[in-house]
Image 1 (cartoon, rainbow, N blue to C red):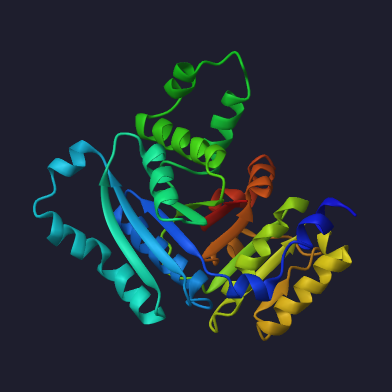
Image 2: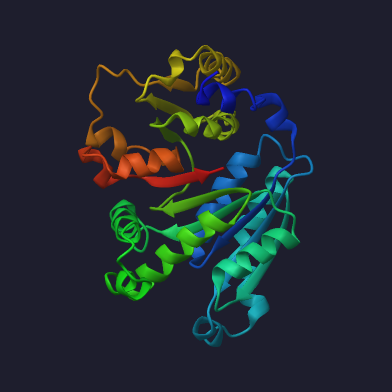
Length: 294
């Protein structure tokens, strides 16, 4: 039994759909928070029973000083997310957290709220494939000190990259990094599969595929669907989604225009590392991206 079989045998799509999710979404920018609110509601819409969302707006002391009436600010900030949750009958808790250590506070809240899914939202200006590739290359060299690595980036970039890296390493539950690039809903979704371990993203693909107006394209770049277990899972998803999920024809070249027309890309962390190290030209125009680590 190979790695793909080991992973896929642990996945029961119907059981995944029935099991409750306690999601923690964290963000610093209000627009990213709204985008995260839309995305997590799309993921949980098919499984609202007993599922919940904890939304946390993380700010520093300087930002806190510029907020007038905190309750007015909070009501305005979370109004869209709350409306989405009410529409989908999903329980939501909202917090504004002043913090000087985002990672520690996120992990503390995740444990306190018993969250089994953590989504960190971040803008593409401070976290993108080029920045992450450069950061990981610098980190992989033991000669480079942390101070030296930080000096290679703008202050906000260095802080964001360090926080993401630390969170991915320390959180024991499913962790996802959402790179917001103007996300406003999943109508066209692109799923590159570049590593055998990335099969754990399929339950999220399945949940999104139940959304009536979505169109999902899976790019099987490594021939993983030749595995009979994964082929069965793919066929099951296609059947349950009424054909809203399709497989990219590998005889065709992926063009810039196709990528530009996508609303969202979902990829596993192993596949993400391979994608950003590739020479594929269209990676310069990626849509909003959800990177999942299990």
